[in-house]
Each structure stands twice: as structure tokens, then as C-alpha cells.
Image 1 (cartoon, rainbow, N blue to C red):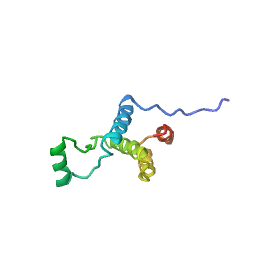
Image 2 (tube, rainbow, N blue to C red):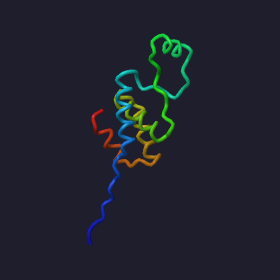
Image 3 (tube, rainbow, N blue to C red):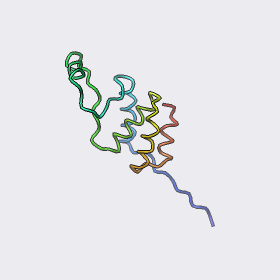
Image 4 (cartoon, rainbow, N blue to C red):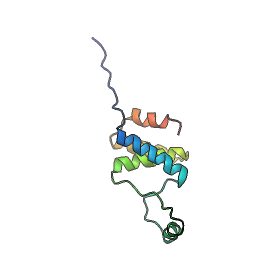
Length: 103
């Protein structure tokens, strides 16, 4: 009898687009946040035209975006976000694959 192997489904096209978006955001304007913008940040955005990244509507995709961004900045919060991704239905293999990209 052959041993069964469980394959992890690949990330969807949309999920890879979120990874790409997070990488661009990390390079251009930082990771953004989920807190409402302060008066100073709104003034800065009005003067420069550069706004802070806004959260994505889908919690799974937003957590993926923040995870990639935090990895890019070598932030300690990335590990916690990785566990949140697993809790949201991503497999540990998927999370490890993203982390292994050497972000």
C-alpha cells in the first residue's frame, strides 16, 4: 500500500498579487497600518500626495499583506502574523514557502 501524500494547494493568483503589492508597499512607503490616519499623516498626504497604505477588505489577504511586509522589514511581528495566517486557513507549508522567498 502506498503512503498518501497530502499536497498543499498553491497560492491563488490573487494571493500572489497581494504578495507583490506588499513588496512594493514595503519599498515605497512602509507597511501601512490598520489604525486610522492621524491629523499629521493626513496633512502629510495632502501636501505630498503620498498616502499610507489602506487595509485590504478581506482579512485573509490583509494578514498576508502585513506578513509579507513585516518579513521584508525583518520585523519580529512577522512570526505572529505567520501563525495568524495558519489560523485563517493557510497551511504551514504555504506560510513557510512565502517566508523562504528570502523577503
